[in-house]
Image 1: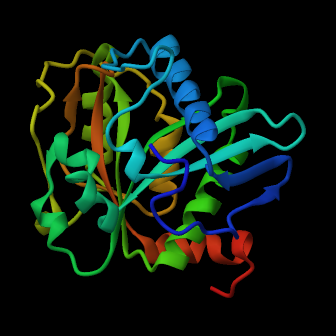
Image 2: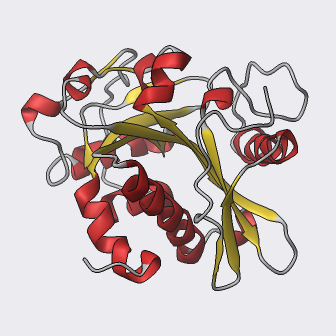
Length: 254
């Protein structure tokens, strides 16, 4: 991969939010740093099975087509969070969105306006707070506004243990489903199981953040054997994202 980003850099996404600094990766070195953080979280923590060629790195063919948004501790410079952005333009060059490998998203493809996908979002275990997620969202909101993005899509992972994935979908589908005409279909549906007495669960922080900014769930979850989880397809009309974040993070009127 060339060290030069595949789309024009947005220089304004580089600032401090409290003690956290956000910017786009600008070099091969920074991309590799992000891939190492992803490996640490997805493999070392979650036990994912990756088909990687570079030891200690989570990488795939989409990385070279994405913008990589990084969050650092402003004091130490340590990379503590990362997400990647794939726009409709760069997805065409990449052969499609990541989510198309898990879902039939033809209904989403027909939406008017621009679409971008975020994925491989991860946060270092010592920094999993609302501030880190909010910092990532501030960078995403700025990119959305500058690029004229109308819809944001992605896959939110939920745990498989004890039927939590099925319970989470069942509960959230009562309130957070997209309209019927905007539903997707999983290519590997999560097997249904008889659930025993209800047990408490915690929503994954990223899924909670999606819902908080107005995202909706696009349909039944897809089983992801490599990551040992189930994925929910997420759709967000970015008008909601911009309104919530424009004044606080970008200094713009709502």
